Every structure is written in C-alpha cells, then in structure tokens.
Image (cartoon, rainbow, N blue to C red; front, side, top):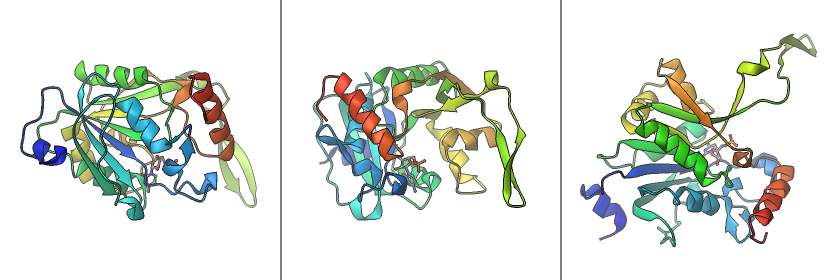
Length: 246
Ligand code: C5P
C-alpha cells in the first residue's frame, strides 16, 4: 500500500498539514527551456528545494505537487527529512488558480489546514512556513506572509498612447505578499468552488473578495519569486551563502 492510499483510508496522524506546491507555470520570462520549477539550483530543482524546506515543519505533511501536464509521470519520492504521510502528483491548469484547485481536489478529508506554496519561491526560509502555520493554529482562516514595500508604488494607466501616473497609494500601508499562504482547508475549497473568475494571482485574493479576513505575518527577503534570469543568479548567490554549491 502506498502512502497515498494509507492517507485516503483515513489513517492520518493528528496535526497533519497539507502542503500544495504549485509548479505548473511555464516561466517563460526565465527563458530556461524547461518549466521554471524544473530549473536546477545547487543540484536540486526549484520544486525539490521548495518541498525540502516545507518538510522541515514539525508536522506530518500530506504533500501535493502540481506540475505541467507532461511532468505527471514524476514518481512519488522518499524524503530524508520530514514526515510525509501521503503525496500526489497532479497536472496543473492554464492559470495558477486552476493549478491550486487541481491540487486541492486530491487532498483527503480529515485535514484542517493547507499551505499553498509557489515552487518559484524555492528559498523561502522554514520559519516563514512555521509562522503561517502558527497563525492558522491560533484560529486564522487565511494567512499571508508579507514584507513592507520599500519602493514608492504608483498606479498607472494608458491614456491614448502614453502611460501616465494616476495615483500614489500610501506606502506605509502597502505590503509585498509572498507564499506559503495558509488556509483552513474547508474555507479554501469553498473559495475555489465559488470563484467567479479563474485568474486570481494568489489565493488570498479569493478570500478578500469573499469577505474572509486574511491575517498577515512576517515574510522574508529570501522568499522572493524566481522570475527572471537575474533572480536565478541571485538565488544561486543566496544558496551559496547557506553553505551549498550552485
Ligand atoms: O507565474 P507566476 O510566477 O506568478 O507563478 C507562481 C507559481 O505558480 C509558480 O511556482 C508557478 O509554477 C505556479 N503556476 C502554476 N500553474 C500556472 C501558473 C503558475 O502552477 N498555470
């Protein structure tokens, strides 16, 4: 019997947390020739790095990998650290929101909390995962890690053929939002089931639209999203400062 089958049979240990790592984006801005999550950094790809950090949580984990269609042949893995009590690999959709929904669909019943993580944020420190989960366990329905914004952000719009500034929001109240984003599993399933559009760039956006309070915890500069070749260079540097080769 595989770990997946055991979990589906209702033998989940107390405190099991579901972690969905979304890795189905093509990452064309990176121009790496493979989907972004499969780009290697220090001997592991971004997806594997993300999973290894998620597994440092001191909880049993039910792990879902959401991958591009042609990567679903990936086998279930065994892990050196962490307690993986079940796992699944599923094909993602054409938007991030669809990919998350595909991941949620395979999580067995009996789990209270889920963390949704971008594979592209492969260097997110484990303490960010721990803070998000702690807020959920303290009663939050939805939690996001965030950093203050240091740039002045302006809202722009196209007027004719010119892009012009139309507003400058107060920087003190702006935050850059990262992942993992944490939810009560039942709440997030409902949010996805009732979503009107399929193009939310994060799950907390669905919560806000539905009037669910989203709590904010401290994120980390290392939880940046690898998007461009420059980000990849910086990620190599960050990994090297953690004592790993790149
Ligand atoms: O495109 P973006 O960088 O915002 O993607 C964030 C995360 O969502 C990435 O890890 C990416 O692989 C994932 N994603 C996905 N399915 C999509 C689009 C993005 O799983 N259709």
